[in-house]
Image (cartoon, rainbow, N blue to C red):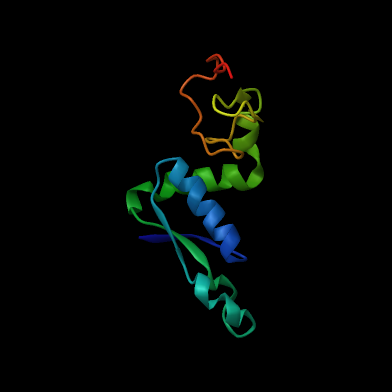
Length: 114
């Protein structure tokens, strides 16, 4: 297990952990409950750890792409429509933010009729 990222707060750490999980990399947030003492503790108290050392390099590449915005831009032309609620979503989303439906394998599926 290796530390990948020292987060500014628990929300950031969980956002990164969730992103890594969506890419098949198991990660863990550590120190999130210590942030209430932030003024007296080291800055890197809340952090994201990659569980498998063999996945660390890939996780780091993904993190750099995620934080720089290049990962989201990669999918900018792949917008999709949720087959459940017809919400229009950008390509980087793996599930509908409105209803939680997982993105279909192919985005050219017709919408279900109401």
